[in-house]
Image (cartoon, rainbow, N blue to C red):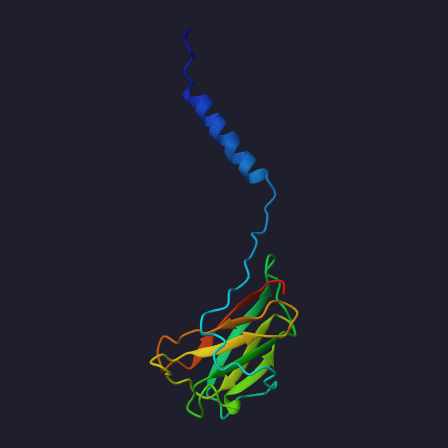
Length: 159
């Protein structure tokens, strides 16, 4: 039995139809996975830290976003607690803790004293602890102890 070899034209038509079929399928949003808590993130956490305008004298900005898992929608009114070892106190000191709420775009921003190294690393602590979603603790590290900002983003999943 002799098989007919496909022509160049047949191969091109077949490849084009595969590409067209691939593009005609409706685009689907990829599921955004929830942020996992970081090891050491909950160290010195104080439940119920007050919502504040600023922690201490300020000079350093902690920023970030809060979004919902799966669709990535921004979450307004979510409570983010922030604490760190700073020029004004240790991360276990109550005056080194404060909380803020996200705005309509899911963005939070809180001024605090300059973060300084603790155990060799300049780092901050953040917690999502509003209760509507699973609690998440983050412990991001600054690239340099001279950095004046640190950003951390939360993607929240079911409680």
